[in-house]
Image 1 (tube, rainbow, N blue to C red):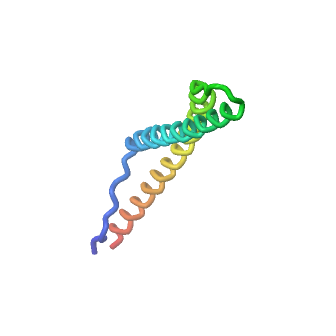
Image 2 (image 1 turned 120 degrees about the vertical axis):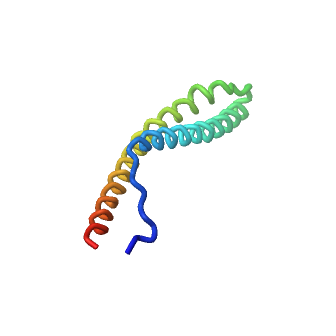
Image 3 (image 1 turned 90 degrees about the horizontal axis):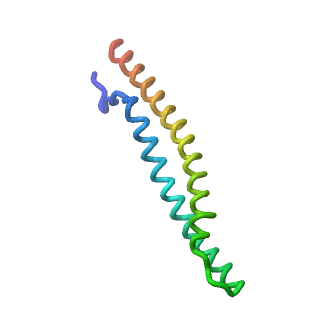
Length: 103
């Protein structure tokens, strides 16, 4: 009896591609969110002090360091998660092959 949904063979060369894609996407998202919050904070701070807001401060001292930190964290987490996913898929494929040979 053939399985209804045969598992695909895990491809190790897709792991780095997925890690890079996830890292880039989440880094850009964290940069955008931190830049937005940095601009809001800069506007509020400048408004309270009665001076002109310095938007370059939001880029250089808030958004960029947050994005770099988020990129490092996401890179490590994505590598760990993708390696676990790959190893689990490989183990399940081996189990499926053993089951199909036994029957």
